[in-house]
Image 1 (tube, rainbow, N blue to C red):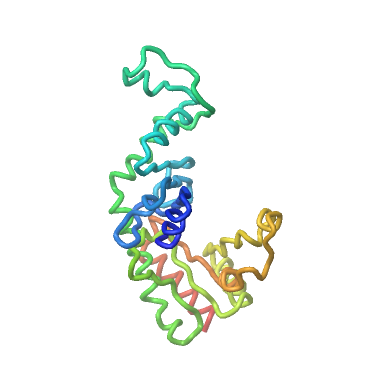
Image 2: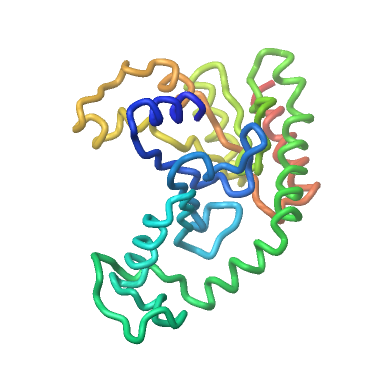
Length: 242
């Protein structure tokens, strides 16, 4: 991000920071989503803090952008200013749509945000369990464990392992599935997606990214995983790979 911000300042560019999974995570002591001119969070069902769908827009130090975002959120009107008593009636001002979260979904999310550290610590326990108990497999050079860089404070959104080949990844994934353990290979590199290809990119442009994506496997990580289930998952990984 530091390099991106330097480039943006040099050329007068705006930075939109995609921090969809980054709620309550930090880089160099600063919260993700607060580096750029605009930051975005997601509260989709797969995120650490969720209300099923939707998200949040963070606007940093730009009063005019804040005012316009509020209007766009309110179907293109200045209704929020009317509610605050700043105008005697509200009207159509700009483009917009209905981006307001319902009260019920907001309440569901708010209950989790009140327990934000409790949820984070619960996820950390699962992350640490995997990390500590899969160490022997890394020492045997069977896989590599996810690491958290020293400048980063994780929110423990996921835990992944990297196998030595795509074939080994697929084999482990299938065997764990037979044991009732759901895993995910997850992201396809964007530059190799249909849209990425349409934009002129191709396979081979980012060989390291492509290699890692083929060998990466995510293990289950969600609130509610208990010690017995974690033991079963780790034991199953060992039995498949050794």
